[in-house]
Image 1 (cartoon, rainbow, N blue to C red):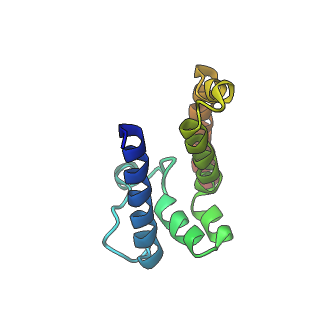
Image 2 (cartoon, rainbow, N blue to C red; image 1 turned 90 degrees about the horizontal axis):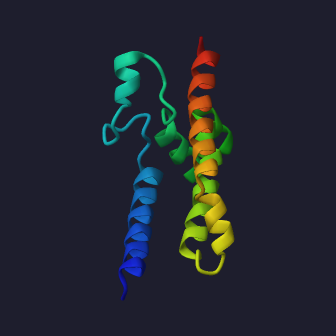
Length: 125
């Protein structure tokens, strides 16, 4: 077994275990999950605030609640899955891989995250 295949298998196993934990334990009420250190110290939500609760809601098919906890997570999960598939199959789709992992696209994604960070905090004021 090559290293790439082993990494994919390990990542899949970790993701399944994490999904099981997030399904059975509610981050809103369980001490198992850490609180956002950034929010605790500044009072400002980071781009990831509410992600754990959003994942829990998504695993229970409650998209509306997940959207309210963190809309970016609802959008990001399918995007991340798409990136993983393209990355695994980069030999099959080299052009798509180059475009998705180009500086322009990656910087644009970072820009969208920063924009999300600002918008979600302005909306709370």
